[in-house]
Figure 1 (tube, helix red, strand yellow):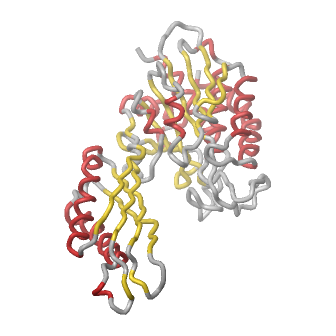
Figure 2 (figure 1 turned 90 degrees about the vertical axis):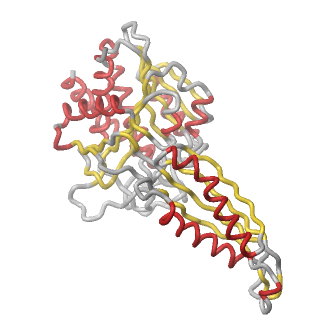
Figure 3 (figure 1 turned 60 degrees about the vertical axis):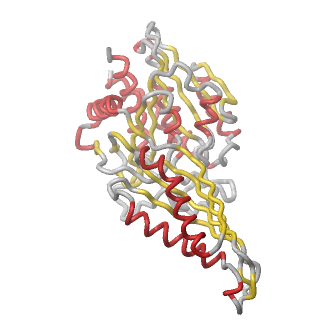
Length: 393
């Protein structure tokens, strides 16, 4: 069966490169993937899948029904949105949309999803159950997965697979991770409320800017002194807004940032921990405060048995020397984790790095490029994993 999968994928490879380049040239921002969704729906329909459009706003579902009576549904999720970045590559198929670029590889994800659907559609007789392909909008703003779930995308799903490109892994190889793959990502907003006054007489005021600086410093110091270093936390303040004039003591400062963590137990205690620190600093200097801690997406926790299945299918296809078991998780975030609240799943890293280049630019970089040979690697890996899934008891 692997030989058939590889043969079908090799024949499709030129078409898949065309698809990828079309998507790359026409990127769309989160929640605005109308043309991409229509294109995806057209490819799925022409391949014989049952298609639903407008799922999760601009998402698409394609379902492939096997010939058996196995009631399990295996889902494959890919995302379609681009980033607000001005592309600075020299590709012939560079983005035609000013200020928008597929700098996170979602054009590759979408193409691999379509390629897997096209291959499996030609071998549906070998599938005893249903494969549901989820083409998701708005991953970059961590909303699309929730939209898809709300519209029923995970109903009756038994397991789900996903992938994400990784430029630090060479094309032709993949990375697997047992357990935590990515971090939970939460949003933090802190308001420091002081009292205004003349810049020459700060002792008559309550300086919100100075107090805000103390809050930031104390939070960073407290992480290293009060939190378990084996359960990492990253707290980054990315925005500071406050003050009206150079010679006026600021009475309000707003801090906005992100908080990343890997362990659910650690994450659960972070809101109270942060508020206690802010309260102690502000109370010491007579300021008031407001803390708004907004839970974002949880950590991606890969299911052991499904990751083992992926590893076996990938090693069969490419050999063990091209499969990396990643020793560390990423503190980046992925809303693939939302699907894992409804079914077990596993996400792998698809290597897209050029082996002959000194520099492979990272994700979200305006010069990010991928080795397109990775598309075949992704399709064969997913298709073989799907086939192996149905062989399980």
